[in-house]
Image 1 (cartoon, one colour):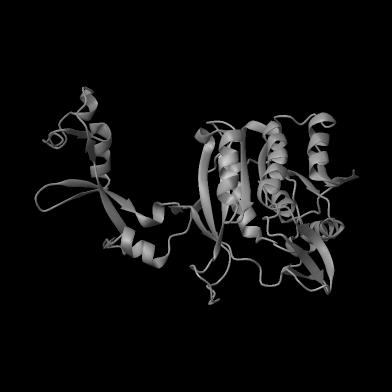
Image 2: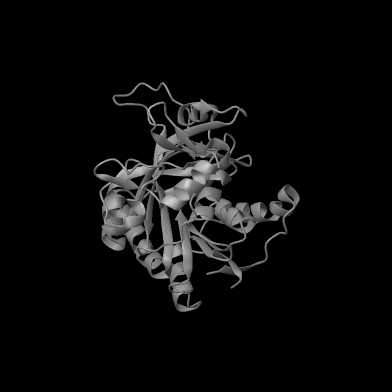
Length: 343
């Protein structure tokens, strides 16, 4: 499949993908950052983006006038088509504002199934503010993550341990200066499996517990110096920090908005890189039908994924084309080939 950049109403664009391109069940990942039902306009002035603006200077990049029930109906119509496009191993991430997001979640529970809801991810978007208001300062928005089925693409994301993590999680240091921690070699529950109840160095697991692995493996660990014996003869498995791939990514992400965005509500490439690497594979098709300045498409390309972008705004299409052209000069990666369609 060739990469596609489509200019037009995304409802029409999604129907085109289903009916003309026959892509039902072919999309492995959808990320969308739709309007947030703010009731305002987003502007571009002097080549730079601004937030919702009351001024009449600059050009309107896009309008965000739908609110309440009208907005939910608008988004639902598009999510129904996106559900049809998703593969059985597909995932969808909907980036939304905290004021409307909980209504969107109820609607997505119905469309995708409560059982396929995976995360409500809090995205830290800015530094703390000191605006006078009744209520706590808002520094986050939300990303709703659903899968099409119980067996999605999932490439476990990891992040590096910080120094504080290492000190807390691996508090011990061996003679070679390597940080490590120890964990029990037995687990709760008695079993009838002889391999997990046999004698190890003359002892059985404590009452009501069993060895986590077979005794032969325990003996291999011990001979290799990977079991630490306490002063009272309690064995524990040694886990070295430098042999771990890092810690699991949690559901609070700090990807603050770019300080000088070229397009309104532009998101950091690192956020899209994380989503794309986690929930798609090389050669998967990634779809963003509110593609804005094309950050999703650029991240998909540099991560060796196919992509489809849709946006109605002339400013968005121009920004996307410019971003795609920048790939080769900025990253020394071949500029993507794609087909442009105007509906």
